[in-house]
Length: 284
Image (cartoon, rainbow, N blue to C red):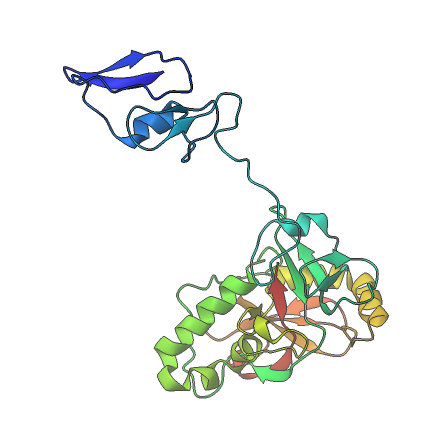
């Protein structure tokens, strides 16, 4: 079926497919390609037994699917949510090719251990090493509430936006501290500049874990440590306080106590100035 315009109205004609082109009637006024698309003319090249739409460059191919169904990626894309993580499990080893497995696979390079999988199939994996202790905010910065970063008045266990939080702080650091941005928010800049030797192309894709991701680490600590041990990488540990990317207010940010598995937002008005442990995550 095709569409012509007559006296300002759409008139529908039924055309039969054949091996020759149908001429366009001289009295017919052609309309835009969108009308062809709405009728199912979505092939953009000529094919055998296909009928060319009488206007535009579309072809109708009986028996062929006019729209491709979205396909699931075969592996994850490091630094980007593709939904592939739904095929993985927490504590799986994430490899540099984007695949994940509970087992050590010879010939593949581990890049992290899966620590969070969301209902949308997006996951995050913990780096295979810690970066040391850094301040959330240094004396070079002014204690301000970051406008686009949510404030959490209680444990931020529902904040899973590690990378969005990190990007927000990195962007804000330029506005607040200009050329000293990396000196103002060192914990965030350390993870942003993290460059694992096994996969240097992931630089700029690592993030400071949010409160909800740290909570997932806490709940699955034993299994995650087992995977880290299998690939001879440092365990989570039990004596460090880890910074999260979740903010409490202008003076405080949340951190996770690896010894007891709980959160605190500090006990002084300048808690962002404390140096706590930093270990990045990457989205996949």
